[in-house]
Amino acid sequence: MSWVKTKKDNTNDYPKSIKRARLIWTAIFTVSIFAIVLFFSVIIIRIQQSMLYSRLDSRLVELTNLSQNALDLFRMQTTDSLPAFLFEEGQSIQVYGPAGNLRFTIGERMPENLNVPENSRSEMNRDQFFRTIRFTDNTGETRTFRTYSRIIQPKLPALGELIVRTGIDIEDIVEEKSQFQRKVILFVFFFPFLSFIMTYILTGMVLQPVKDNYNLLRKFSFDASHELKTPLAIIQMSTGMLLGKRDKLDDSVSKKLISIDNATQRMDHLVKQLLQLARAQEYSETNATNEKTDVALLIKSIIEEYQPYAQKRYVELDLLGTTQKKPLIDKNILRMIIGNILENAIKFSPENRPVEIRIEDSKNGITVRVKDFGPGIKPEEQEKIFERFYKVDKSRHNHSGSGMGLSIAKEYAKKTGIKIELESEPDTGTEFFIKIPC
Image (tube, rainbow, N blue to C red; front, side, top):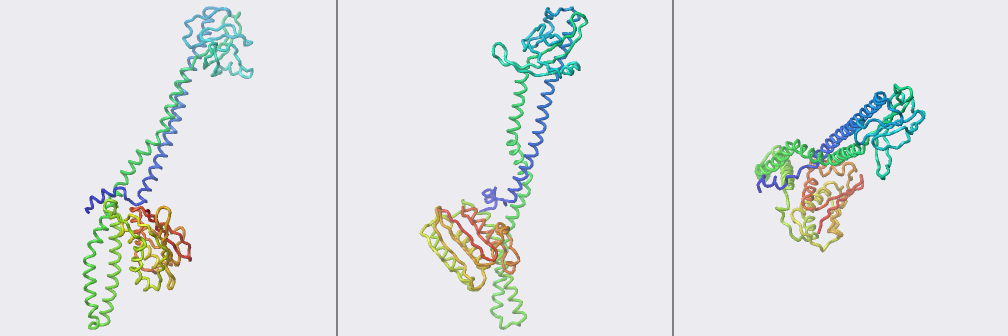
């Protein structure tokens, strides 16, 4: 399988840290942009409202001034009407006596009760009495008017002090303002979704070099581990031949050969695990060879395979339970997952203590439990043990190993739908649960 094809198959197969970083930065940018847009939206609504009322208030003051000028110019008596050219459709002018009684009105009908509290007359004297009133007219229609009231002193002494209230029907303006606000609110409501999509794409573009480097690293791991197999095999074969003639060599030379052979074996084990990890990252359903697998028989063969290693460490392997279910799965991958977890359990199990392998039927498949009675794992480290090259606390550091076995198992499990969980307490041991779907 070519690397290009594998890369296309696993386009989204990146470490969780890259995916998490993309989501975090997307969320940060989305919230930041949304806060800025919300802030300016509120300002825009306030400005629009202020501009609307500013124009209305200016027109109301203008109408009031025109009313006073007309009273002075035409010497209108209080029972007469003002000329019609002073107002337009939707506007109203009312003239009240000093006691607040209506003298006459022209234009649109408004409530005839001035309803000015006594403590507000000082404001009227300062030309500062604007109000927005809502009422129901004779036809039952709800009307909204913006009004302005002011005390005026006509030049005709006979008229005395009058109160002029001008009004403009703002129902259309209120509707216009409401529509504008609804549009802004609708935009603000849908903007986070658009912002999330845009920022998600942008952060993906920013993180693309990281993804490319990650793919290069994966390719390097695969190629390097593959290329190292041949020289390591030659070194092992050469040291094996020399060690076969150890009786003819000096003791110092023999010791050096043994050291070289041991180091070569450790390196060979590391290279094999690197190659396994690279293959696990490339693994996909397209290259899977699924078949009905007898899990009980497979685990027995795995135990036989790891029995010499367990005996070397004085650890007993106990198989408990069985199953008749035969899940459709890649047998070699399942062997690798269970084998790596079993090897890990043997490695950290104390001498003369067993490692229990229990097979149980579950509702949706089969559960394989692997339990050791070793030092256990602290809660804060339980997620980290599946990271490559990670080794837990110093109580485990005296054991040989690359720290890749569990990461290989987790990588394959993620690709095949198998779930790996664990329960552990310090100084009481660790139990892994391998849940195989059927």
